[in-house]
Amino acid sequence: MPDHKTIKQHKHLKVFGSLLHNGNLWHFNRRSVSGAFAVGFFCAFIPLPAQMVFAAAIAILVQVNLPVSVSLVWITNPITITPIFYGAYKVGAYVLGREVIENDYKLTAEWFSSQLDLIWQPFLLGCLICGLVSSLLAYTAIRLLWRLHIIQHIKERRVRKHNIKTGS
Image 1 (cartoon, rainbow, N blue to C red):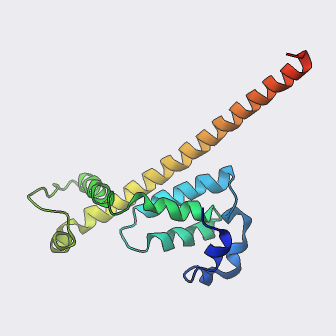
Image 2 (image 1 turned 45 degrees about the vertical axis):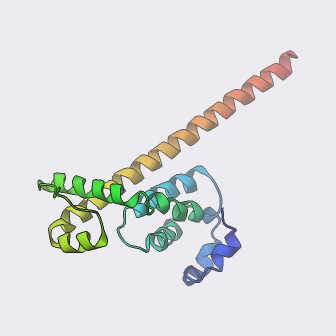
Image 3 (image 1 turned 180 degrees about the vertical axis):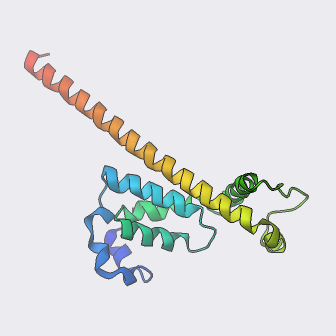
């Protein structure tokens, strides 16, 4: 995790000023981490180079963990971006009832720009749907895992208390 002072001094984040002093942006608790997963997963599907800036802005506005939100956008990285965005395009094409363009091509910037007039609607709709679904699933999963962890911790504490009382 980057140091919060370093993040506060970052040239792109200085615009948020005193908003960066909110404790939820830096602490790990059930609400801030699950919300950060939702923000990070949603922003990972934004097909723009400024995903991290969007994730930071949304995290600050909804007061969830900033470093987690920003780091999770790297789900879409140079290795994974092609299959993830192609999958989003296929989802959008399916929802719109369009046929997926599948011919001999390489997913390059040149191909993308030449096919943009055909694929932009299903691509953006697919990104929106995948972003919403993945953020909802991530939020729910983190809340559930956090709750299960707390339940396990309480059970272990009860066993320890019982062992102390019985002397075992």
